[in-house]
Amino acid sequence: MKAKWLLALPASVLACGIALAACGGGGSDAHGGPERHGNENWEREASLAVMPSFLDKYASRTKHLYSIVGEYQDIMKSVNCYCGCMEYESDAHQSLLRCYVASQNADGVVWTDHSGHCGICTEELAKIEQWSKEGKTPDEIRQLIDDNFKPDV
Amino acid sequence: MLNSLQKNTVYGKPADDLYPATKEILNDPNYDKIILPEQLLEKLDNKESFFVYYFASDCPHCKRTTPQIKPIADDLGINMHQFNLLEFDEYFGKMNIDGTPTLVYYKEGVESDRMSGGIAQAGTSGYSPENFKAFFEKHKPEGND
Image (cartoon, rainbow over all chains, first blue to last red; front, side):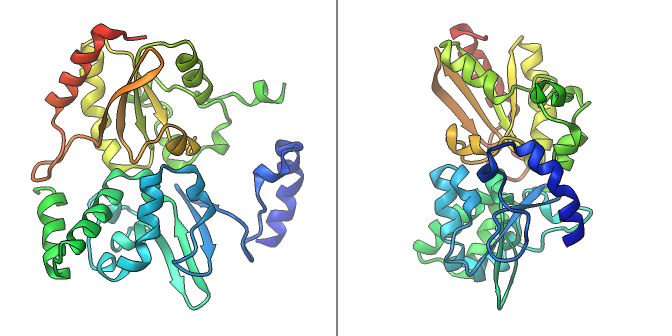
């Protein structure tokens, strides 16, 4: 990985010209900014309370929804996403949470920008927030998500 | 100079720089009206009146919606410009797009109407193909640049 990155360095320096700041690093250690994984960009942060820098590019509603993932992560883990991502041939998403968070461990979280691109992923979380505030239980919310977003087969 | 050498795809960048999902639609006739950021900004600056379909090439919902509304737009003679937000994601914020797909109508360079979301699958709430047809027919007389 390291060697590959070093090889790519001259090319990226050429492509970036003097706009070095715009290119970001390439290192996966520490806080290196977003990195591409297939069609997603991933970004490591210390916790769900720390927003990824890629959010700077998005509209305020999207920023708000990423900011409440920490609060609703338990229910998100048990809710299906019906955008189609759970049927991907490779690296299929396991729940709505995966549309926002690629992985999570003791060292921190890896955010993904997938939901930033996805109207259904954001709408589902907006509804989870709304229904939670209305006092609905997790079971009721799961059912409502299926009722509203699950297509007829 | 460097830029002109690199413009070997409709996105103004080399295929190697594109996301996998974008490479998949490079030759798809349903995406034959791709508009680039500088073209979009120029149209807005010129106070043109036009439709823009904001999509992301990786968005499954867009993949289902585009093949349904593209023929509707073509049949009505609509210039439905297609902006791929996966490749130019800073335009989510710049154009205030909450999710994909979003269809926007700009009247004389200013947004005047939008439809957020694609065509709903059976059993879900959302738009029908008729809703899109009505949107196109409503705004076409105001300009279709």
